[in-house]
Length: 433
Ligand code: S3P
Image 1 (tube, protein in one colour):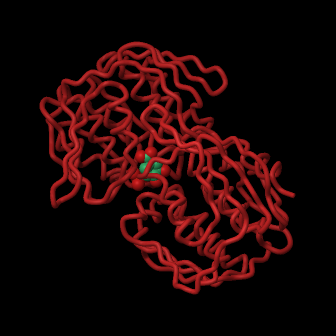
Image 2 (spheres, helix red, strand yellow):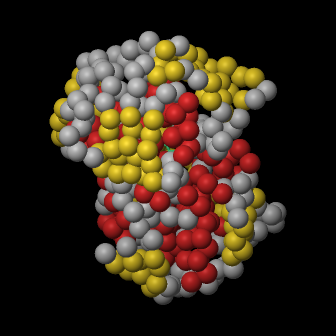
């Protein structure tokens, strides 16, 4: 376990190059694998999670080359995988396990997915159920991994409304839908990140989107084929969030991050920070492989408002991974910050409500815990011994808290950051003054 010590900082400044978006990189690798032809993916995420996806694809006989952040995948088509000779290891990555299950459910062979202790304690019934309705039989350990997937070809098309707002469930069902007879629809009462829909379109699949009073209906037909097409992955807004919050909380700071993905269903952190009074400039807006991107500059200082600050409702799905770092921001806001409707955080890489609350209390913050969120009051933070609980976002959020706290903060299990942002601590050190 690696230990990192962070000291209070005056300000941060510089230009930060972020890793490629993790969610988009997973999809790029998987979709390129089931496409016909060769796809070159630029700015592929350096994260350990995305390497887990590549490892699983290699176990299914997919060939790729990796040159720095460029990955070139030789697509095998929807039916071109080899039956794996070993278990497929998804590591710490929920996205790998839940999305690839949708592909494996429609294959003419069986496969077993495993993961680390954290992943094997996370809920998988949410994908076992719809894939079961589609005709695949999945054996699990009481709804958790290891998962043994007995593929079926073709699968049966379904109309499915996930019990929780989850882009992973949506994507799993749509990927299975590509292997089904007929049209598969997912109904989303609350919009979740739509990278799958955008990327399927990029690869030439027709994705029908409609609205009814029950929500958004996203449909794909089982006969659709994917055609290989080169793409560039935007930089990861979830990684940008740590620098945005650090810069906003340290007066005199200014941090610029180019090519950040600003998909409307992912940019909740930016919208929330602007609403909370942060000084953030968005420039050079463009579109890249069906995803909006822009350069973001965050300047130090927050325009204080006397109001009660609450994040709840539909925006939560669009900033779900940024809640830990937004809770740190809350310690610096005049009205504090309440975050609700976020019970999904209980089943992330750690129970993120509990890990944030406990670590913030260790640093002297006044925090109230709710089943679905927390309330943090404006607090003077002091250095403390912090546990990452093997959770990358906890390790990085509390490194930022360490910049704001008096004295020294020690992060135990700092290596967890590699799951989404290898080099995070070096990058942070390079902007501190
Ligand atoms: C992701 C969706 C979200 C998010 C995760 C990545 C994705 O999970 O928390 O980090 O790439 O689809 P859920 O679908 O479980 O909400």
